[in-house]
Image 1: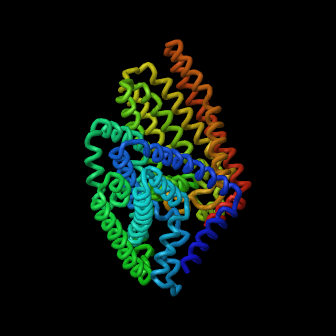
Image 2: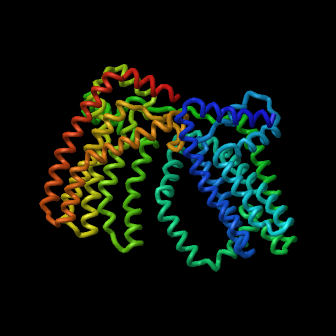
Image 3: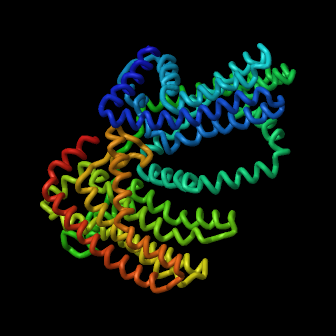
Length: 523
């Protein structure tokens, strides 16, 4: 039965890649990225063989502890990314619990995260290949550490299955996860400075972690190499006891989950409230705008973009504090305009089968394109204006404000027009409604990347006049170029916006049923 579950996982993975050659290309790109990262870590662990015992012990224990912690935290918000062996699917099958546990645990190793963790863990054997006993101890520790990671992830995902079934929990956890993800650069830099300033404490930290479930399995090789067999024996017992305890907890949680699956039904809602539909004008464009604004506020696939925007000033201010020069904040408004304008380039794809509402009601394509663009513009325009004025106030370079506004408004309006065309002409593979924004459903990943990349290049070409005028102002120092840029950015941007809405509406009228058929495939 265990072998059957593993074959099932491999079959599902293989069939997912066979659905589209572009899916295989996307998987290959992700695999190459992971392979490069794994290669760097493996080389570092091999080089640690020539380092001192204390240094190698500290590095391995700290790295292993971080891996266990990551496997325990990340699945809370990323559990929906791989549901090929979802335990709920085995509710109606009389599979013995031991075999089900073993099959699901080993199945967790099949995939890029599992394989990467296994390869890096096995590389610690090379670190402690200073004798037969240290190498054997490191091998045992690597196996215990990897299985602890997998079983801990299973315990966490099974324990939070009820919460994960809640739409509110999904939305909050995804947004909470995106904040440190966006701030990863400043966080890594701050941690790096803290580590470099307190390198003398790292061995003490590693020594403490080696007695905890996080670091005990990774300390076996180092303790044996350092001549501490008694400590290694105790930590081996700790590692085995922790793994056994996690397996027991997982068994109890899985038994309960198989008997009483989490309820995902929606609660009762009071009727009679139109929300934004009762506020905005009762026109086709107004109705589409209200629907799109509702998505922006309630759908994490959209609201995730809004979370990134207020964090951009934090990142740029952090970079300015590092370099002592805050000139980078001048790019805050243009970058925000670019992100927000391009965020609706996959609007129809995000609609999924709900796009049938637009096709069935016969709403004109121009009204559809205009409503979606105005919904984005409702908050994008104030954000761009505030960021542009704020950057000028921070740098006290008010002479550059007209040019910055011209470039930012040009990017915003031109980008909205181009996005209106792209989303009406092409569909891309996106997470389905209700899924995590990080979930990668099977589909044309390569085509998606091509459409997004080419579209961004076209947008850069469309805003070349504004960019050229901004460069001219920087070179000559003449404020006249800034005011010309403001006029050009506003007028040219509005012209391209209107042209994009009309062209996108024309294509939408002609290809509405075909677009519905394409987005309905991703169900």
